[in-house]
Each structure stands twice: as structure tokens, then as C-alpha cells.
Length: 254
Image: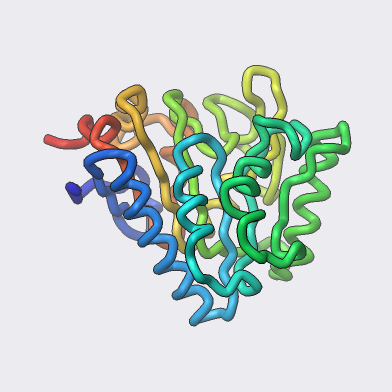
């Protein structure tokens, strides 16, 4: 493991990010498990519950499988998603389906503690509004405020997108909503917005593969473009923690 000192991509960030470069994917997942377990325990100790937003894609799947093997107070953990493809929850591309298979259906989560994004209404904008109302009912924060998720897991694409916040798309401009519609080459997604993600107590990026190096170079550059590389605009009020495998992280080493 290599821990590097990386400047924040944004002057508005509350603290510099933690950047750890792991030898390989297995050690990255092991460290991710340690970080997530620590923050789950702290959230439950402080607030008697933990709110956790999941990422899709292949990288976090072994983390979910590892979490399924832990002895945790499942009734105190609430599960959300950072984004979702606009497909039925039974679809092989569904982030919800992957998380349920690897973790959520393997342990006794109370059904009411799992809050998937709706994708069956035939109206992505309407489903985004419905999910935002569900979140507002759950978090009960004052009008105009955003809640703080305890843990947000995010990945990053080779183009620098994260959640369903894609380069130069309208979702990047949404600052007064919690949930909006993302656009992946004309295909709608449901996604949490940047201001919602940026209220998190912990954002943990899991990034693997040498094809991520060009985007990472720009994300950690003081002159990078947030609209071209949306992951760069994720600067939470809490802790920003990047876990990279050696293939991805080599670009940040001297």
C-alpha cells in the first residue's frame, strides 16, 4: 500500500483527500472493507443508524460479498444507491440486482431498510421526483437543506464520470434537487445530485485499471475541468477517500 499526499481538486473542500494506492484489487477490497466497517460502527455509535449509498459496476461487488460475511446490526443500516440504470430491478444491468445478489439478500436486512431507486414508472423524471420524496420523508431535514449520508461508495469511469453524472450533461447543473435524471449516450439513469453527494460524511472512491489514469491525472490536477471530469467535483463536507489499485494509481506517483 502506498499513501500519497494529494492536493484537493477544489479550494472549497473541507480537507485534503486521502489517497491510497493498493497493490491489486484484492488488497483494495480488503482496505475498503476496513474503511466501511469503521464508518458503519462510528455512525451507529453516534446516531444509532448508518446510511450507506452503494455504487454499481464490477469493482465493488467483492466488497459487497465481503460485507455479507460480517456480523452487523442490519436493522440499524439503511441502504441507498448513488445511481441506477433505468432498467427493471431484475435486469442483469441493474445496480440493485447486483447488490442484492452479492450482499443484501444474503443477510437479514429489514425490507424497509432498503431504498432502491424506482425504475418501473416509464417516466425517469417522475421516478426521480418520487425517489426524492421518499428520501425527504426518510431524512426529515429542513427545507433547502441536504442530508448527510454516512457513507457514499462511488466508482469512476474512464471518462471521469461518477454515479450517473456524465461529462457535459445537464445533471451536473442540478443544484436544487436531491435526485435527477442522468444521461448516458441518450439512455436515462437516475442519480443523486452533486450537492447531495457532497454533504456526505465519507465518500469512498474505488477505482481500478490503467484505463482510469488519464482521468485521474485531470481530477488531481489544479487546472482540471469539473464538467469534463465530473468525479473531480465530488468534494464532500466530510472525508474524501480514494482507493486505487496500482494500475490506476501509478499516474499519481512521482
